[in-house]
Length: 311
Image 1 (cartoon, rainbow, N blue to C red):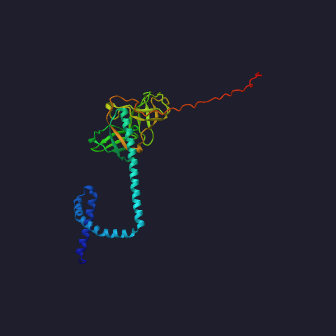
Image 2: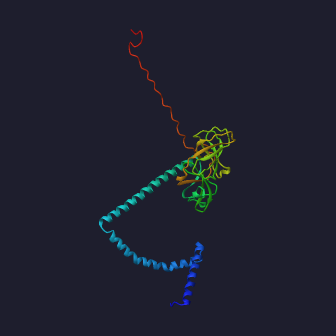
Image 3: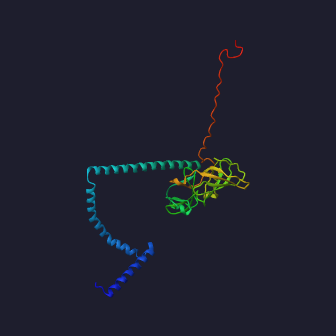
């Protein structure tokens, strides 16, 4: 093409059209009107790309074969592949064993409380930077999961269901700042409300400001009306700090949860509540109190003639 005024105007017009199409495509995102054209181009040029790759790849493979030739290199590569395979199998086996142990523990917890549960696996976690402590599980409405169901694992209370899809559901964890659950102290039956505090211990306000509570005391869920969102008797945690009452109408304690929220894998959604409140039966066995060490007193027996007047 000759360098004329008309050719220059045509070039400027083509460049302007190209920029306009690029702008429309970027702003359209996944709904871009050019998506159909892009797919058509991919269908048209895809076979050409595959043909070029097929022609070039043998050359690259040949170069790689020459570079890695020799019995020594071949043996090292084979050993590396075998080692990687063994490590993968070992890791998978360890994970399966851990998961089986978690599942067994959860089934025992559900059995102790007579909870009907649906097992699920955690497949994603929420964004911590959004100050929301949530996880996603691989069970949804088609599995009988519904909003405001209790979620637990082998250690105790995990959270409650907030959003349900067909095959997944979102769980609000018990350590989320927006999470609140009614609690009941073991043995004394003192009632309170536990709130999440992120990575810190839960904060529990006991309704009785003069409640007798000490470090190490344990608590379970109190239960909700019609068992939603919480069923009764699920272990929550144990007291790690008792704050001064200062004459307040309520008493505040800090509770360390039984559940480790950074290690969640297998969980159970309670799809059927217990017929009766299990009370404290789901709590793990209380740690045995250390027995005092018996003291032994040794009394020396005097020999013959050691007493006065023995002669």
